[in-house]
Amino acid sequence: MSRISIDSTYLDPFFNEEEVSYLEPLANIANKEMLLAHKGPGSDYHGWINLPKDYDKEEYARIVSSAEKLADKIDVLLVIGIGGSYLGTRAAMHALSDSFSDSLTREERGTPQLIFAGTQLSARYHHQLLQYLEDKRFAINMISKSGTTTEPALAFRLFRKELEKRHGEDGARDLIIATTDKQRGKLYELAVEKGYERFVVPDDVGGRYSVLTAVGLFPLAVAGIDTDAILEGAQEALKDAELPFEANEMLQYAAMRHALYQRGKSIELLVSYDPRFQYIAEWWKQLYGESEGKDNKALYPASAQFTADLHSLGQYIQEGRRHLFETVLLESETSYDLSIEKIAGNPDGLNYLEGKDMFYVNEKAAEGVSSAHRDGSVPNILLRMPELDARTLGYLFYFFMRSCGVSAYMLGVNPFDQPGVEAYKSNMFKLLGKPGV
Image (cartoon, rainbow, N blue to C red):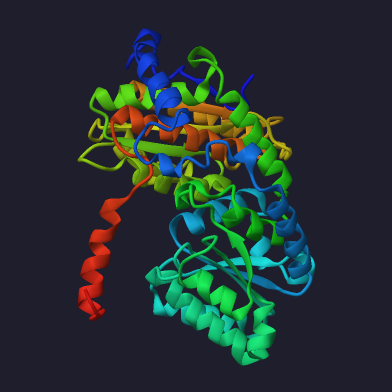
């Protein structure tokens, strides 16, 4: 049985099982002939497909060893990268860490804090980050295939200068780790020249599919996350990805999305009922938006955090324009038992919940919302999973990547390029006076 299962209870009456089955041949072609046989466009970037079992074991051992040594020396690991170079890491940290770990001291936390830079061009953010680091022991993990992407390259300049001011070039050398191309690019050249420790972004793995490489594994290992379990979960998903369509939740999810798109839905809203999923949604939005959004096609990937956003977006979802559907992430169990007790006088009118726990109330809220939205002509695809731990997260990462590759090929686009991203860069470089532009 798959770790993630699809519940189609709230898809009726928008389409039936026969409609999804009708898409089985298309999904199988996308999966077997275009992905697995490497015949689809962008096949040079199919290296992530078998990565959970074919990853570089020697480099992984070095990642774990280096992470343990570095963690003992620092209070903060500054992860510099943008897009796929940081979103998966941030998703895992937010999902698997204590909700309030950032408010703890280094001693209370027991592991270094991860902070992200180079994700935007805000002078205020980077200035305040420099101030925050004044009394912190920090190291840098610079993540970039090229080393020239504007946002992370500027941040690297700032914080590398700070490290060298404190420790000199020799001292800073041991506190800068480059995750970059195996043998080319400006960051690779700088890392070789300065003697920084290097980890590899494989040539055949694009950024938004790279969370299971050193891009995600090294910073997560520094922060004490169980990367072995993440890889084990991804391995489990890879095995399930080989199942036939009728037992393959990844192919079925791709087919359901495609069927709803064909019926005129233009927005997919990824919904969760626990704030730990917040940055998983951010990672998911890049994965699907950048992989599918081409040739004037594709669903627009958006997200919402329930029940909080029901008090802001709920009215629109229930009765606004009927152009969206929801994919809902639901945990089936929890380690936290918060039982509700009776209060004398029942001042808030909640004594009827006596003996129930918060997890049960949250479950019933999810059922009530999905039922109401279905009645309001908003289809719901429920993705049910065990409690979100490192293994389940590894499974979820691979589940979405595999389904995304299939979905994009079903749509008729290349899942592994992003030509539209260059348009804003060209205009920005012209305005900034970059030579040769």
